[in-house]
Image (cartoon, rainbow, N blue to C red; front, side, top):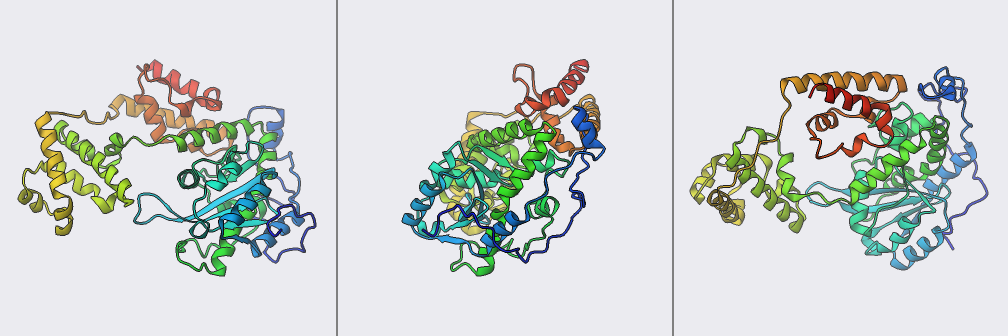
Length: 432
């Protein structure tokens, strides 16, 4: 059948340009550093070498992107998934549109074992729960690059998340690259291939999809198995593979944990300028907006903008006229949701409820934050990794503000504990 996935005979070399890029020199050495073992010292001096990328396998993967297999029926999808349950690794990517909607509208799911590429069209196959057994097959490693948004859309459309997970973006960060390095830059750094980015802003919901779109989508996934193998080898040599496994499990837990709509007001900038009553109103309005956005599948800003919620919470209007004079929304929107907004404002005022302002850092805590960031930067330099991989500024603020009863934030447990967390916690204890 057309979708059988094992392809043994390499194709002839692909015409993509194979160029040596920064970070991957002629001897196939990399120069990241660490201070953890004898091997790591050799790595710091540039002595450790890595297996040459298999050009035949790379050509096979790129050739698969030239002729992706379209999956456009439920029957074809079922047969393909049953066949691929015997794979060892599967690269996964999605294409979606999320401009005016609360949830991402899925336009395409790409799957590849490095020898073939499947492009699953959910607009034609119907529901994607058929893919769930593949995602849940623990003997198959699922490879994604920067997966949080992909995990969100896949959880909603298939009912599950792919695991075990291998995040190539985080893996690269553990080898000295930026934590935010995109897929195309990763391919350049790791494989020495420059691939086209021309369809990044495409409309993935418009049919028929153009040939250029299909090729772009296939290129986004066909190289992932080869990349995973190379990254896994490098991480193993540095004894950092368990770092990635821990972080990938954390990503999956976060993806499966629903956001609390009661706390949605906390993401609205400027909330710290409101008093307790106004914050209670903002909390209630933001909760209502979250429910409306999800129900109507509208982006939050298309229900009511953040600035409008802030102004309403501050002004506390009691009548339609007062609400209208705030000039924070279109008259048609006022007619549609104005009554609901006024009811919420009145209910909060009648209850007498107040909400405490978000806790901010004191002068002493800001000094501690600065010192902690210096420690993180120093430690990251010793390990030749992006400081953000150890702890971001926001994560350090969370650590400082966390009480003893709340426990240590999960981010600072696991492999980070001995490397950085214990030192940060000692600094916090000394200054408390």
